[in-house]
Image (cartoon, rainbow, N blue to C red):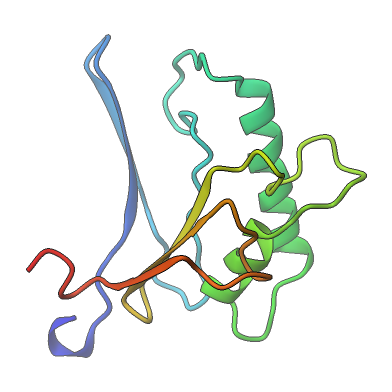
Length: 135
């Protein structure tokens, strides 16, 4: 980050049919988060990859973030959400079929990836520094 300022982050959605797009910027307040669950969340377009499952997981993640924020907030809260495997929930965030989960931590400048393992309970398979990733 230049001048000690954190870089801005956003969720970008693009849909070729109809030439539509949407951008949702990350709030600059400490502990702010953005979530994405394999479906369009801002654009009103059809989702073919089980939208009921993704919409339910998105709603569960939002509820978990509101219900139990940690003292550290931000990435720590998202990590606890990514590892959610509550058996009494129809659509837990993590389940045995979860192929990969990843966490972009803007404050630390890292991307962590879990593959077939539970975030917050297992160490990430990969951790990359964003600043030098593409060099």
